[in-house]
Length: 254
Image (spheres, rainbow, N blue to C red):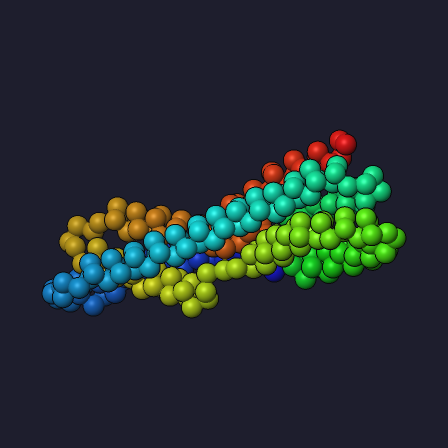
């Protein structure tokens, strides 16, 4: 996605939300106050606002949970890498050196993907695929040399599979999003509720502005927070890769 698009949305959405509040005031003024008509509330207005608040809180919670899942997957990936790093000392020097070299490349792909130097999930998968293909050829050659080397490779494979599973789960988690239909309901609903808030406050002889302002701030920030949580590639709230960085730094020091 073009990085300018989220910025444009962040500016356009609150502008439209404010415009919807103003539209509500205008409807109340044009069709009721100027014609000296009274509005008989149906009693369901608060229920509609409450329903929207429920949708908003549910979506915010869901987006926060997805962010928490990404952080858990980072820890899973770093744990798998740490296990291999610790276990490498029990293999022969030659095999241990190959493991450390592969692990260094693996962590490098992870960090570059997180930093945006690898631009997409597809690029990350292709780069990791090339790394794994080269490493598997080296393991095949090593396993063919002797029965003891073959046993080393067989002992190593479960840890290697766990490392790869952690990578693929983490990378794919970056494209998990709140379903588009839910986001549509959230945004469209905020516009409709904004009209209702402006309308209800615009009916008063002495107009009230505090409630619409509070509504605008709370709903605007909440929707922007959900969008940010849905954007692990470049949002303000991103997965914490500190564990993976520490393991990479540890390998570089050795």
